[in-house]
Image 1 (cartoon, chains in turn purple, cyan):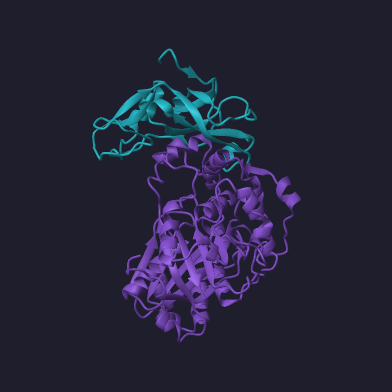
Image 2 (spheres, helix red, strand yellow; image 1 turned 135 degrees about the vertical axis):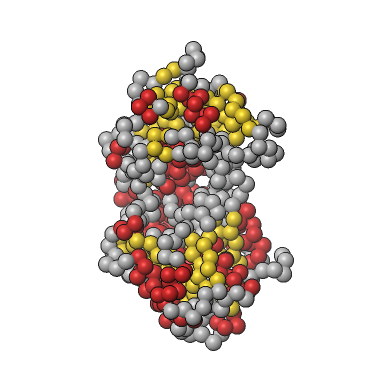
Length: 389
Length: 151
């Protein structure tokens, strides 16, 4: 590995989120939600929000750094960054970009944030209302292939065909998120447990996804503050140190109209390779993993492509027993994640990964040294993050 | 219309869904013009003969800007599929379930196209099975969709 790496140089020092709401439930504006989260993260870190001098986000967040910095009264903004691409593929990518800014010396305190009020700005899960579509959507939308679930079901179906399995794995992923959310009072689905029978009996959204294979749509915001490990020593919280952050997209994954040459993939093959190379560890070293669930099938492929099990072993390895926070081989999505905590576009997975390092999760894994996040399967690009205690 | 192509009797999905409009920059005019004539064409590099779909401004293989449209047979294989049960558009309420297929074209470098699988929405769909293109005319929009039927 080259010396040019962010490994061991940057730490997460502050995290916060707003109350998480059902879609349309936020009593304040998306911008206020975002500011609340950023101020909360600064308080958690023990810095004045005016000290934030770098901003990084993803998925075309509407709350842009110039407005945020003006509202907060930040003394100076020396880094302002947007990770391109849609969905939650940029959660860890924004973290990676924040790390790069800190190691390069551009900024001292970078906030990674995501504000999202689907009730105020429209839902991801609805098709376009336009009368005509041009370009790539012209090859899909007129055939009723319009939503993220419909786009990704096609990839997952192919994976399940090639590897002759996957239904049990997807069910285990869903049940795990709901089980962990029952311990987490922040979770929108806290108090709404999911039984195996209810999973099986739920309506199809688009085969092979049933209702509980799909993420929620929510209102809320979350924020994470990073600084150098040197500055982190003087701050309030136990630092969560970044040992690897990677981002990218495999060969022609964004080829239009479902023409990615390698199709039955979460798009993590090249990104995972860079991640393990930078971290200098292997999958068996991971104590706890937060893997972005737009849809359970994407988690299934992500875990395979990070080397946790082979593609033909998904139904054997991916069980609720193995995913449990208390004693599972690979504790997974311990806050409830996008399925059952909040669809905070995966930034809630990063705050949870930090909590696992701090020892403050509501589904705390014992003796966590390595805490991992996979952001955004099946989109282009995707990204990864590994933290250590 | 060429003699070896079929036209669907009616639209597979209800009116009100967005219909294609050729891109204003002209990139895919050739594809939609051919579909109206009930022909299936795929973009092909005139230099290295690589196929690509959807259309791009350059050849992804040799970076030539000299691209043309290559007529293909309209026979394909199902590469993946899905049965949609939840309507995400007002026009689709009452139209579920319906089938969407991803079809690869063996005589065009295995490029893939999305369409509906015509016929019974509850039919068994077998990945790898053969399908043939049919054309769904939308004269009101001066466009035709390419659809697929099991052989």
